[in-house]
Length: 490
Ligand code: GLN
Image (cartoon, rainbow, N blue to C red):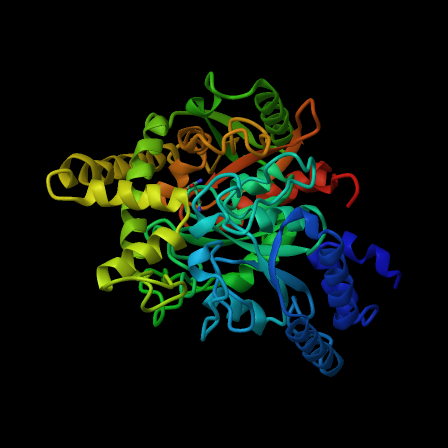
Protein backbone atom coordinates (compact mmCIF):
# COMPACT_ATOMS: atom_id res chain seq x y z
CA UNK A 1 0.00 0.00 0.00
CA UNK A 2 1.02 3.60 -0.64
CA UNK A 3 2.93 4.55 2.50
CA UNK A 4 2.24 8.28 2.21
CA UNK A 5 -1.35 7.54 3.18
CA UNK A 6 -0.47 5.50 6.26
CA UNK A 7 -0.65 8.42 8.66
CA UNK A 8 -4.10 9.38 7.39
CA UNK A 9 -5.56 6.07 8.54
CA UNK A 10 -7.44 5.83 11.80
CA UNK A 11 -6.33 3.30 14.40
CA UNK A 12 -9.21 1.05 13.33
CA UNK A 13 -8.29 1.28 9.63
CA UNK A 14 -4.60 0.83 10.28
CA UNK A 15 -5.27 -2.27 12.38
CA UNK A 16 -7.32 -3.72 9.52
CA UNK A 17 -4.58 -3.04 6.96
CA UNK A 18 -2.06 -4.69 9.27
CA UNK A 19 -4.26 -7.74 9.78
CA UNK A 20 -4.79 -8.06 6.03
CA UNK A 21 -1.01 -7.84 5.62
CA UNK A 22 -1.39 -4.85 3.28
CA UNK A 23 1.34 -3.19 5.28
CA UNK A 24 3.74 -4.55 7.87
CA UNK A 25 4.16 -3.29 11.40
CA UNK A 26 7.82 -2.54 10.63
CA UNK A 27 6.93 -0.40 7.59
CA UNK A 28 4.29 1.36 9.66
CA UNK A 29 6.68 2.11 12.53
CA UNK A 30 9.36 3.33 10.12
CA UNK A 31 6.87 5.60 8.38
CA UNK A 32 5.77 7.24 11.62
CA UNK A 33 9.34 7.55 12.95
CA UNK A 34 10.24 9.41 9.77
CA UNK A 35 7.38 11.83 10.42
CA UNK A 36 8.48 12.29 14.02
CA UNK A 37 11.98 13.28 12.85
CA UNK A 38 10.68 15.55 10.10
CA UNK A 39 8.51 17.42 12.59
CA UNK A 40 10.89 17.57 15.52
CA UNK A 41 10.38 21.36 15.66
CA UNK A 42 6.94 20.79 17.22
CA UNK A 43 8.70 19.65 20.38
CA UNK A 44 6.21 16.83 20.89
CA UNK A 45 8.63 13.94 21.53
CA UNK A 46 11.11 13.68 24.40
CA UNK A 47 12.60 10.24 23.77
CA UNK A 48 12.85 7.71 20.98
CA UNK A 49 14.51 4.31 20.96
CA UNK A 50 14.27 3.06 17.42
CA UNK A 51 15.86 -0.32 18.11
CA UNK A 52 13.19 -1.09 20.68
CA UNK A 53 10.39 0.24 18.46
CA UNK A 54 11.50 -1.84 15.48
CA UNK A 55 11.99 -4.95 17.61
CA UNK A 56 8.42 -4.56 18.90
CA UNK A 57 7.22 -4.07 15.31
CA UNK A 58 9.02 -7.23 14.17
CA UNK A 59 7.38 -9.16 17.00
CA UNK A 60 3.99 -7.78 15.95
CA UNK A 61 4.63 -8.87 12.36
CA UNK A 62 5.48 -12.38 13.55
CA UNK A 63 2.29 -12.49 15.60
CA UNK A 64 0.25 -11.19 12.65
CA UNK A 65 1.75 -13.83 10.38
CA UNK A 66 0.85 -16.54 12.90
CA UNK A 67 -2.65 -15.28 13.70
CA UNK A 68 -4.17 -12.57 11.54
CA UNK A 69 -7.23 -12.49 13.80
CA UNK A 70 -5.12 -11.57 16.82
CA UNK A 71 -5.52 -8.65 19.20
CA UNK A 72 -7.27 -5.61 17.65
CA UNK A 73 -4.30 -3.26 18.17
CA UNK A 74 -1.61 -5.64 16.94
CA UNK A 75 1.14 -3.65 15.20
CA UNK A 76 -0.48 -0.22 15.75
CA UNK A 77 2.08 2.41 16.82
CA UNK A 78 1.39 4.65 19.80
CA UNK A 79 3.39 6.98 22.00
CA UNK A 80 3.09 7.57 25.73
CA UNK A 81 2.91 10.76 27.73
CA UNK A 82 6.14 11.01 29.66
CA UNK A 83 4.22 10.66 32.93
CA UNK A 84 4.05 6.89 32.33
CA UNK A 85 7.23 5.13 33.33
CA UNK A 86 8.77 2.79 30.78
CA UNK A 87 11.66 0.37 30.93
CA UNK A 88 12.88 0.93 27.39
CA UNK A 89 12.56 4.71 27.19
CA UNK A 90 13.70 7.52 29.45
CA UNK A 91 10.92 8.69 31.81
CA UNK A 92 11.16 12.33 32.90
CA UNK A 93 7.64 13.58 33.71
CA UNK A 94 8.81 16.74 31.93
CA UNK A 95 11.13 17.54 34.84
CA UNK A 96 14.84 18.19 35.10
CA UNK A 97 14.55 16.25 38.36
CA UNK A 98 14.13 13.04 36.31
CA UNK A 99 16.30 13.91 33.29
CA UNK A 100 17.75 10.68 31.94
CA UNK A 101 15.81 8.52 34.45
CA UNK A 102 15.18 4.90 33.51
CA UNK A 103 12.46 3.02 35.32
CA UNK A 104 13.01 -0.64 36.20
CA UNK A 105 9.39 -1.40 35.22
CA UNK A 106 6.58 -0.36 32.86
CA UNK A 107 3.38 1.39 33.98
CA UNK A 108 0.36 -0.96 33.96
CA UNK A 109 -1.27 1.01 31.12
CA UNK A 110 1.90 0.65 29.04
CA UNK A 111 2.02 -3.08 29.78
CA UNK A 112 -1.66 -3.58 28.89
CA UNK A 113 -1.26 -1.83 25.55
CA UNK A 114 1.93 -3.77 24.82
CA UNK A 115 0.08 -7.01 25.57
CA UNK A 116 -2.39 -6.01 22.86
CA UNK A 117 0.49 -5.70 20.40
CA UNK A 118 0.83 -1.91 20.41
CA UNK A 119 4.25 -0.76 19.16
CA UNK A 120 5.72 2.07 21.23
CA UNK A 121 7.14 4.92 19.16
CA UNK A 122 8.46 7.00 22.04
CA UNK A 123 7.68 9.34 24.89
CA UNK A 124 5.75 12.58 24.66
CA UNK A 125 6.45 16.00 26.11
CA UNK A 126 4.21 17.30 28.91
CA UNK A 127 4.08 19.93 31.61
CA UNK A 128 6.43 19.20 34.50
CA UNK A 129 4.74 16.56 36.69
CA UNK A 130 1.57 17.25 34.63
CA UNK A 131 1.15 20.69 36.21
CA UNK A 132 -0.08 23.11 33.62
CA UNK A 133 -2.60 23.99 30.94
CA UNK A 134 -0.30 25.01 28.09
CA UNK A 135 2.70 22.65 28.05
CA UNK A 136 4.89 25.68 28.81
CA UNK A 137 6.00 24.21 32.13
CA UNK A 138 8.06 21.38 30.63
CA UNK A 139 11.74 21.52 31.56
CA UNK A 140 12.45 20.40 28.00
CA UNK A 141 10.80 23.28 26.18
CA UNK A 142 7.29 24.06 25.01
CA UNK A 143 5.23 22.07 22.49
CA UNK A 144 3.76 23.90 19.51
CA UNK A 145 0.19 23.63 18.33
CA UNK A 146 0.16 22.14 14.79
CA UNK A 147 -2.80 24.39 13.84
CA UNK A 148 -0.68 27.47 14.53
CA UNK A 149 2.88 27.01 15.70
CA UNK A 150 2.81 30.30 17.61
CA UNK A 151 0.13 28.89 19.92
CA UNK A 152 0.14 26.46 22.83
CA UNK A 153 -1.21 22.91 22.32
CA UNK A 154 -2.87 22.95 25.75
CA UNK A 155 -1.64 20.91 28.66
CA UNK A 156 -0.51 19.05 30.40
CA UNK A 157 -0.75 16.28 27.73
CA UNK A 158 0.35 18.80 25.08
CA UNK A 159 2.87 16.52 23.39
CA UNK A 160 0.25 13.77 23.08
CA UNK A 161 -2.34 16.08 21.51
CA UNK A 162 0.11 17.82 19.15
CA UNK A 163 1.59 14.50 17.98
CA UNK A 164 -1.84 13.03 17.19
CA UNK A 165 -3.07 16.22 15.48
CA UNK A 166 0.09 16.41 13.34
CA UNK A 167 -0.28 12.72 12.39
CA UNK A 168 3.06 11.81 13.94
CA UNK A 169 1.29 8.94 15.65
CA UNK A 170 -2.26 7.62 15.27
CA UNK A 171 -2.96 7.67 19.01
CA UNK A 172 -1.36 8.45 22.34
CA UNK A 173 -1.85 8.01 26.05
CA UNK A 174 -2.41 10.97 28.31
CA UNK A 175 -3.26 11.69 31.91
CA UNK A 176 -5.93 13.98 33.26
CA UNK A 177 -5.87 15.39 36.79
CA UNK A 178 -7.91 18.51 36.15
CA UNK A 179 -8.38 18.51 32.38
CA UNK A 180 -5.05 17.48 30.90
CA UNK A 181 -6.53 15.12 28.30
CA UNK A 182 -9.71 17.04 27.47
CA UNK A 183 -8.20 20.52 27.16
CA UNK A 184 -5.22 19.70 24.88
CA UNK A 185 -7.52 17.48 22.77
CA UNK A 186 -9.81 20.47 22.41
CA UNK A 187 -6.95 22.90 21.59
CA UNK A 188 -5.53 20.54 18.94
CA UNK A 189 -8.82 19.48 17.32
CA UNK A 190 -8.68 15.80 18.29
CA UNK A 191 -10.71 13.43 20.48
CA UNK A 192 -9.71 12.56 24.04
CA UNK A 193 -11.26 10.65 26.91
CA UNK A 194 -10.54 10.46 30.61
CA UNK A 195 -12.38 7.53 32.16
CA UNK A 196 -13.95 7.35 35.63
CA UNK A 197 -11.36 7.79 38.38
CA UNK A 198 -9.97 4.33 39.13
CA UNK A 199 -10.89 2.68 35.83
CA UNK A 200 -7.34 2.66 34.50
CA UNK A 201 -4.48 1.76 36.80
CA UNK A 202 -2.30 4.56 38.17
CA UNK A 203 0.58 2.14 38.74
CA UNK A 204 3.63 3.60 37.04
CA UNK A 205 2.10 7.03 36.48
CA UNK A 206 4.39 9.59 38.11
CA UNK A 207 2.05 10.90 40.82
CA UNK A 208 0.82 14.49 40.82
CA UNK A 209 -2.47 14.49 42.79
CA UNK A 210 -3.31 10.89 43.54
CA UNK A 211 -7.03 11.36 44.26
CA UNK A 212 -7.49 12.98 40.84
CA UNK A 213 -4.88 11.49 38.46
CA UNK A 214 -6.36 9.27 35.76
CA UNK A 215 -4.98 7.77 32.54
CA UNK A 216 -6.80 8.03 29.26
CA UNK A 217 -6.52 8.13 25.49
CA UNK A 218 -6.10 10.70 22.73
CA UNK A 219 -6.81 9.88 19.08
CA UNK A 220 -8.60 11.43 16.16
CA UNK A 221 -11.98 9.77 16.66
CA UNK A 222 -14.22 8.35 19.36
CA UNK A 223 -14.04 4.98 17.64
CA UNK A 224 -10.26 4.95 18.02
CA UNK A 225 -10.50 6.10 21.63
CA UNK A 226 -12.88 3.24 22.37
CA UNK A 227 -10.38 0.72 20.98
CA UNK A 228 -7.61 2.15 23.14
CA UNK A 229 -9.66 2.52 26.28
CA UNK A 230 -10.88 -1.07 26.04
CA UNK A 231 -7.23 -2.16 26.21
CA UNK A 232 -6.17 0.29 28.93
CA UNK A 233 -8.89 -0.11 31.56
CA UNK A 234 -9.57 -2.84 34.09
CA UNK A 235 -8.81 -3.59 37.74
CA UNK A 236 -5.22 -3.70 39.00
CA UNK A 237 -5.84 -4.57 42.65
CA UNK A 238 -2.32 -5.68 43.46
CA UNK A 239 -0.64 -2.54 42.21
CA UNK A 240 -3.15 0.28 42.53
CA UNK A 241 -5.34 0.12 45.62
CA UNK A 242 -7.65 2.80 44.20
CA UNK A 243 -8.27 0.91 40.96
CA UNK A 244 -11.98 0.15 40.65
CA UNK A 245 -13.32 -3.35 40.78
CA UNK A 246 -15.07 -2.79 37.44
CA UNK A 247 -14.39 -5.36 34.74
CA UNK A 248 -12.68 -4.34 31.51
CA UNK A 249 -15.25 -3.56 28.84
CA UNK A 250 -15.21 -3.69 25.08
CA UNK A 251 -16.25 -0.10 24.41
CA UNK A 252 -16.49 -0.70 20.67
CA UNK A 253 -19.60 -2.91 20.84
CA UNK A 254 -21.99 -0.13 21.89
CA UNK A 255 -20.72 2.53 19.50
CA UNK A 256 -23.66 2.42 17.14
CA UNK A 257 -26.54 2.63 19.61
CA UNK A 258 -29.18 5.18 18.63
CA UNK A 259 -29.20 8.55 20.42
CA UNK A 260 -33.01 8.68 20.22
CA UNK A 261 -34.24 9.97 23.57
CA UNK A 262 -30.76 10.60 25.01
CA UNK A 263 -31.09 13.39 27.56
CA UNK A 264 -28.20 15.85 27.27
CA UNK A 265 -27.88 18.13 30.29
CA UNK A 266 -26.73 21.64 29.47
CA UNK A 267 -25.39 23.38 32.59
CA UNK A 268 -26.22 27.10 32.70
CA UNK A 269 -22.96 27.80 34.55
CA UNK A 270 -20.89 26.59 31.57
CA UNK A 271 -22.27 29.32 29.30
CA UNK A 272 -21.60 32.48 31.33
CA UNK A 273 -19.83 35.73 30.55
CA UNK A 274 -16.32 34.21 30.51
CA UNK A 275 -17.06 32.03 27.48
CA UNK A 276 -15.68 33.31 24.16
CA UNK A 277 -18.61 33.82 21.81
CA UNK A 278 -17.04 31.78 19.00
CA UNK A 279 -16.64 28.84 21.39
CA UNK A 280 -20.26 29.25 22.53
CA UNK A 281 -21.50 29.31 18.93
CA UNK A 282 -19.65 26.12 17.98
CA UNK A 283 -21.05 24.37 21.07
CA UNK A 284 -24.60 25.56 20.30
CA UNK A 285 -24.32 24.22 16.75
CA UNK A 286 -23.06 20.89 18.02
CA UNK A 287 -25.97 20.68 20.46
CA UNK A 288 -28.35 21.24 17.54
CA UNK A 289 -26.64 18.40 15.67
CA UNK A 290 -27.19 16.13 18.69
CA UNK A 291 -30.87 17.11 18.64
CA UNK A 292 -31.07 16.08 14.99
CA UNK A 293 -29.67 12.71 16.04
CA UNK A 294 -32.58 12.30 18.43
CA UNK A 295 -31.15 13.69 21.67
CA UNK A 296 -33.15 15.99 23.92
CA UNK A 297 -31.56 19.00 25.65
CA UNK A 298 -32.30 19.45 29.33
CA UNK A 299 -31.30 22.67 31.12
CA UNK A 300 -29.44 21.78 34.31
CA UNK A 301 -27.45 23.58 36.97
CA UNK A 302 -24.01 22.85 38.42
CA UNK A 303 -24.12 25.68 40.95
CA UNK A 304 -20.63 25.22 42.41
CA UNK A 305 -18.77 25.30 39.09
CA UNK A 306 -16.82 28.44 40.05
CA UNK A 307 -15.74 26.95 43.36
CA UNK A 308 -14.00 24.12 41.55
CA UNK A 309 -11.04 26.42 40.87
CA UNK A 310 -10.14 27.28 44.49
CA UNK A 311 -11.03 23.74 45.60
CA UNK A 312 -8.83 22.07 42.96
CA UNK A 313 -5.95 24.50 43.47
CA UNK A 314 -5.91 23.60 47.18
CA UNK A 315 -6.37 19.83 46.92
CA UNK A 316 -4.07 19.20 43.93
CA UNK A 317 -1.10 21.17 45.36
CA UNK A 318 -1.67 19.57 48.79
CA UNK A 319 -1.35 16.10 47.30
CA UNK A 320 1.49 17.19 45.02
CA UNK A 321 3.52 18.58 47.93
CA UNK A 322 3.30 15.18 49.59
CA UNK A 323 3.93 13.13 46.42
CA UNK A 324 6.94 15.20 45.39
CA UNK A 325 8.68 14.78 48.73
CA UNK A 326 10.15 11.57 47.29
CA UNK A 327 12.40 13.63 45.02
CA UNK A 328 15.08 14.30 47.58
CA UNK A 329 18.28 13.57 45.66
CA UNK A 330 18.61 10.19 47.37
CA UNK A 331 16.10 7.84 45.79
CA UNK A 332 15.51 9.21 42.30
CA UNK A 333 17.01 11.35 39.63
CA UNK A 334 18.85 14.60 40.04
CA UNK A 335 21.22 15.35 42.93
CA UNK A 336 23.08 18.64 43.37
CA UNK A 337 26.79 18.31 42.61
CA UNK A 338 27.97 20.25 45.65
CA UNK A 339 26.52 20.53 49.15
CA UNK A 340 27.73 20.88 52.70
CA UNK A 341 25.41 18.49 54.58
CA UNK A 342 22.20 16.49 54.15
CA UNK A 343 19.80 19.43 54.52
CA UNK A 344 21.89 21.49 52.11
CA UNK A 345 21.82 18.58 49.66
CA UNK A 346 17.98 18.44 49.82
CA UNK A 347 17.72 22.19 49.36
CA UNK A 348 20.09 22.46 46.43
CA UNK A 349 18.76 19.33 44.72
CA UNK A 350 15.15 20.51 44.88
CA UNK A 351 16.04 24.11 43.99
CA UNK A 352 17.86 22.93 40.88
CA UNK A 353 15.57 20.05 39.93
CA UNK A 354 12.10 21.62 40.11
CA UNK A 355 10.72 24.38 37.87
CA UNK A 356 8.84 27.45 39.09
CA UNK A 357 5.30 26.07 38.81
CA UNK A 358 6.21 22.92 40.69
CA UNK A 359 7.85 24.94 43.47
CA UNK A 360 4.80 27.22 43.64
CA UNK A 361 2.54 24.21 44.14
CA UNK A 362 4.80 22.61 46.73
CA UNK A 363 4.66 25.85 48.71
CA UNK A 364 0.88 26.23 48.37
CA UNK A 365 0.37 22.57 49.23
CA UNK A 366 2.63 22.68 52.27
CA UNK A 367 0.87 25.82 53.46
CA UNK A 368 -2.68 24.47 53.19
CA UNK A 369 -1.69 21.27 54.97
CA UNK A 370 0.16 23.00 57.78
CA UNK A 371 -1.02 23.15 61.39
CA UNK A 372 -3.41 26.06 61.82
CA UNK A 373 -4.37 26.26 58.14
CA UNK A 374 -5.41 22.67 57.48
CA UNK A 375 -8.98 23.20 58.75
CA UNK A 376 -9.40 26.54 57.00
CA UNK A 377 -8.18 25.41 53.60
CA UNK A 378 -7.63 21.71 53.01
CA UNK A 379 -10.54 20.40 55.07
CA UNK A 380 -12.87 23.08 53.74
CA UNK A 381 -11.85 22.26 50.17
CA UNK A 382 -12.58 18.58 50.77
CA UNK A 383 -16.09 19.47 51.97
CA UNK A 384 -16.80 21.61 48.93
CA UNK A 385 -15.39 18.84 46.73
CA UNK A 386 -18.08 16.54 48.08
CA UNK A 387 -20.73 19.17 47.37
CA UNK A 388 -19.52 19.48 43.77
CA UNK A 389 -19.90 15.70 43.38
CA UNK A 390 -23.40 16.00 44.90
CA UNK A 391 -24.32 18.63 42.31
CA UNK A 392 -23.48 16.12 39.57
CA UNK A 393 -25.48 13.43 41.35
CA UNK A 394 -28.50 15.75 41.27
CA UNK A 395 -27.89 16.63 37.62
CA UNK A 396 -27.68 12.99 36.52
CA UNK A 397 -31.21 12.45 37.85
CA UNK A 398 -32.36 14.65 34.97
CA UNK A 399 -29.98 13.69 32.17
CA UNK A 400 -27.80 10.90 30.75
CA UNK A 401 -24.78 12.95 29.71
CA UNK A 402 -23.74 16.55 30.27
CA UNK A 403 -22.43 18.72 27.45
CA UNK A 404 -20.62 22.06 27.40
CA UNK A 405 -17.37 23.71 26.41
CA UNK A 406 -14.00 22.21 27.38
CA UNK A 407 -12.33 25.58 27.82
CA UNK A 408 -13.51 29.21 27.75
CA UNK A 409 -11.33 30.05 24.71
CA UNK A 410 -9.36 28.42 21.92
CA UNK A 411 -5.59 27.92 22.28
CA UNK A 412 -3.72 31.09 23.22
CA UNK A 413 -0.35 32.33 22.01
CA UNK A 414 2.81 30.81 23.45
CA UNK A 415 4.00 33.20 26.15
CA UNK A 416 0.68 35.01 26.62
CA UNK A 417 -0.09 33.44 30.00
CA UNK A 418 3.34 32.05 30.79
CA UNK A 419 3.97 34.54 33.62
CA UNK A 420 0.45 34.51 34.98
CA UNK A 421 -0.32 31.29 36.86
CA UNK A 422 -3.78 32.47 37.91
CA UNK A 423 -4.78 33.11 34.28
CA UNK A 424 -3.83 29.49 33.54
CA UNK A 425 -5.79 28.22 36.54
CA UNK A 426 -8.94 30.14 35.54
CA UNK A 427 -8.89 28.54 32.08
CA UNK A 428 -9.48 25.14 33.77
CA UNK A 429 -12.94 26.10 35.03
CA UNK A 430 -14.97 23.68 32.89
CA UNK A 431 -12.75 20.62 33.23
CA UNK A 432 -12.11 20.75 37.00
CA UNK A 433 -15.65 19.91 38.21
CA UNK A 434 -15.75 16.43 36.59
CA UNK A 435 -12.21 15.73 37.84
CA UNK A 436 -13.10 16.64 41.42
CA UNK A 437 -16.16 14.36 41.21
CA UNK A 438 -14.14 11.52 39.60
CA UNK A 439 -16.46 11.39 36.58
CA UNK A 440 -15.52 10.35 33.03
CA UNK A 441 -15.19 13.16 30.51
CA UNK A 442 -14.26 13.57 26.92
CA UNK A 443 -13.54 16.21 24.32
CA UNK A 444 -14.63 16.11 20.69
CA UNK A 445 -13.90 18.65 17.94
CA UNK A 446 -17.00 20.67 17.01
CA UNK A 447 -15.81 23.67 15.05
CA UNK A 448 -13.30 26.45 14.56
CA UNK A 449 -12.77 29.99 15.74
CA UNK A 450 -12.57 32.88 13.27
CA UNK A 451 -8.80 32.40 13.13
CA UNK A 452 -9.12 28.70 12.37
CA UNK A 453 -8.32 27.29 15.80
CA UNK A 454 -10.22 24.15 16.85
CA UNK A 455 -13.05 24.26 19.40
CA UNK A 456 -13.81 21.21 21.55
CA UNK A 457 -17.05 20.14 23.19
CA UNK A 458 -16.93 18.41 26.53
CA UNK A 459 -19.15 15.43 27.30
CA UNK A 460 -19.33 14.31 30.93
CA UNK A 461 -20.86 10.98 31.92
CA UNK A 462 -22.01 9.41 35.15
CA UNK A 463 -19.67 6.97 36.90
CA UNK A 464 -18.59 4.07 34.65
CA UNK A 465 -20.63 5.41 31.74
CA UNK A 466 -17.70 5.70 29.33
CA UNK A 467 -19.61 3.59 26.80
CA UNK A 468 -22.42 6.15 26.73
CA UNK A 469 -19.96 9.00 26.11
CA UNK A 470 -18.12 7.15 23.37
CA UNK A 471 -21.40 6.16 21.72
CA UNK A 472 -22.68 9.76 21.72
CA UNK A 473 -19.36 11.06 20.39
CA UNK A 474 -19.18 8.36 17.71
CA UNK A 475 -22.69 9.02 16.44
CA UNK A 476 -21.89 12.73 16.28
CA UNK A 477 -18.69 12.00 14.34
CA UNK A 478 -20.56 9.82 11.88
CA UNK A 479 -22.89 12.72 11.14
CA UNK A 480 -20.23 15.47 11.01
CA UNK A 481 -16.65 15.81 9.85
CA UNK A 482 -14.99 18.20 12.33
CA UNK A 483 -12.78 15.35 13.54
CA UNK A 484 -11.49 14.82 9.99
CA UNK A 485 -10.16 18.36 9.60
CA UNK A 486 -6.38 18.49 9.65
CA UNK A 487 -3.83 21.21 10.24
CA UNK A 488 -2.11 22.54 7.12
CA UNK A 489 1.36 21.23 6.43
CA UNK A 490 0.91 17.92 8.21
N1 GLN B 1 -4.30 22.47 34.33
C1 GLN B 1 -4.46 21.73 35.53
C2 GLN B 1 -3.25 21.92 36.42
O1 GLN B 1 -2.41 22.67 36.08
C3 GLN B 1 -4.71 20.28 35.23
C4 GLN B 1 -3.48 19.53 34.91
C5 GLN B 1 -3.74 18.05 34.71
O2 GLN B 1 -4.87 17.63 34.48
N2 GLN B 1 -2.70 17.26 34.85
O3 GLN B 1 -3.15 21.34 37.43
